Length: 319
Length: 94
Image (tube, rainbow over all chains, first blue to last red; front, side, top):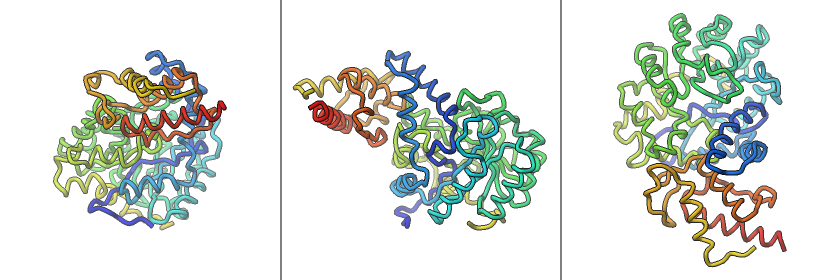
């Protein structure tokens, strides 16, 4: 059982189960293709197959025991597991979306109090998908909706409105991917401005722009500042540490007067070749870390209180 | 395969080669932190590993050696891992 070993309560609002079961091979190979391009340009002799093997070696934690160990080492009390539904857009998905929901439910029950789950369903699955999402809130103990627009739909697509109506009913938030992703998907629907119509039509639903500290930053900040129900998470900042180990992207986002809208997140396991959860947290909370200039109240907002506010409203069942 | 007197120098040279941009000016010692001081991200770490394999004619995965890249924080960690890999390769090669 986790015992908090410091004064900060920390909730990671953006994680995934590290398993190929939930992430299609084509998605991974697309991401690997970008790495091969970068490495080849440096004169490194590498094949896509070999790099895929390396990448997959970090995706062997289907029950999240490894993630819980990393959370303990980092002092993270809870993480939110997100289920992006790739099963409609990418046909090489191993599990159906319903099976994926079941696996996440098992993890939720295996590690009491350590996780929340936001389930995602591609709106093109129609009534069955909507019923699955409602079941996840009413029966599985899930606490939010995960939208992945690069699968081929706008976040303001009317097909999503029934999902947002359920979110309003159960008072749970929506977290949506913003910005680029695996090149096998569509980048053109990843702009935060595409959310604007839905955010206006569903004022009682809170929306979280994932990766808002590193993708479309100006637009994300504008949405957070002027739409009361729009937030952003900082996950993906690890991508910038190669040229700025001080996490300037996070330092910037927490200096703009919107700290009541900024959520800590890591996007585990995406950066597992680069470090562990405690390394990524140290960059933020260390003596000269990216959050060093904030007072205790603001730090608490970013590290836990903001996301707590969003999920505490939920009237979904407890797992 | 044996570890000769210049082994650590070769590894240090590999590290220096993988460092880019403003971090090239950083003096590399055993205690140097790979991410904080040398800006090593995922691509940097991978480039280092594959160059290491090429230099010593190894395939770490085929040798069945499980290296947790995320645990390699400093240059000393990297040197220790390199010694470990070469040691196991020597055993495997008889």
